[in-house]
Image 1 (cartoon, each protein chain N blue to C red):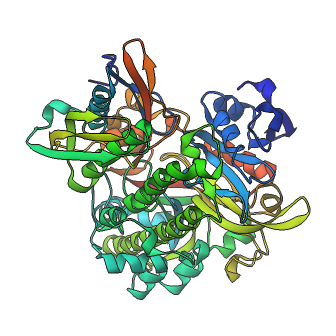
Image 2 (image 1 turned 60 degrees about the horizontal axis):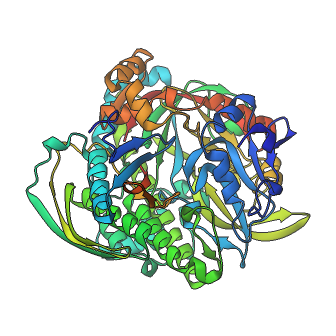
Image 3 (image 1 turned 180 degrees about the vertical axis):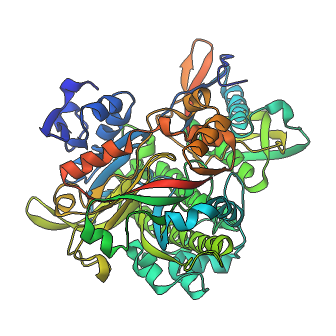
Length: 482
Length: 141
């Protein structure tokens, strides 16, 4: 694709017209500035965005956020809404890590309170929170217990004493999506999940201790309990092998039926089926179950983080308690109501590497956040900032209540491994005052900050485009990498 | 094999977010054996450090040849996650576009370098070439 194939609609929004390719059903739009546009043209992400505009039943336009990068099937950063019930649902449009997401936890501690004990806190997080390739956790569950997790999500953790009611209130969907069906999930998925609840995994997943660097919206920050110099913590992970297997099973199953529904696609990873079909309904019920597993997973990691703060800080600071600010999903398909061409319609919003960002007044938001909009948590790369945003009226009007999910990769993992040495990177980060604990040095190198776009630039675009609003910028002081 | 290595049969290709292998083989059986070797390298790194003291029989069915390749590599990725084993050697008795029968040999690497979440169908097409077959597989990691 070249720059003459699209037009600029607003300072931060571009459109590829539906006439670009005969198989596109709607235009494709993406948020960018001049620099991120050039980066997007550097890989196949915009072609993948155009591919996603071919899905049957797609509404209005296919969208991509400024952290767009090449994925498989959909681009990462893609948002597609399909009509309910006659549009399609695409497992590849959600991705393998169903309900990968971010949780932000607050404390009543300032940087000065924690600095003397930061090394010990990093050690305790590393010790208590299983991370890295092949690491199982302490919460080994049998099939019946896993079925309970599938149905109940974070509510299961509450019943077991690993959560507070406030944790659940401040989680997207209350930590439990209704309609999950454990019988729609394969034996192999349950087998993979046995010891994976309460584990971080590997790749780009992390637990991070951060300091609030700057506040941009006093009212919203105050509502979240955020103040300058405050210590907060982030979790980035998803549904582990359980979700990966659910997606694998349904992408394979859909391959066998897609032609029965008369659907032709430019990429087999986009495989889909009508929402109203038996296959579509089964996937939706299974995906909800995997999403609930992920909510429970981040909740158990929250429990382990609380234990780590206690182990490291009890007797050294006045208050080591950890409270939940919010938990969001960025790989999910959800049935929502949005305004399209002046009418309220029910659609299935696929977000693959994009965050729900509902604006003020949304009835699904908890009371404490309803008038400020949904908190949106955007992690950067380790060594750079992360952001707290809120959803806006603009995100509801423009992007099916969606915004960006991270910095977005710009360098391949193989190139990052060639250009970056894990031990040198760790020294660099330590020199910046960031305590690093990594599952492997090669994995650390793959996730080097230079492999990612400038997250601050991504945020400027979503803020400038009005599909989220800046609340606070936070910077890392300790990182546990998967 | 290394990231810089291209022995014409297995090559790691650039992909922004994930890992991809371009594979070549004389026929389906050779292509699938190369795919197993390449994925074992992604998982374990130095394959000379992997003992070949574990053997497993494999029989698989699928919708078509590309589907079979995903199912095949998915089986090996599953064993890597569940059992901590990689299988770089595949002795495939028969591979048709919809069935595979054979035996794999491998063992536990000193350290698992990578976790493969899934094998994708992204742009997956087994293409004939002058010397046999070629395919590029993208892994979600």
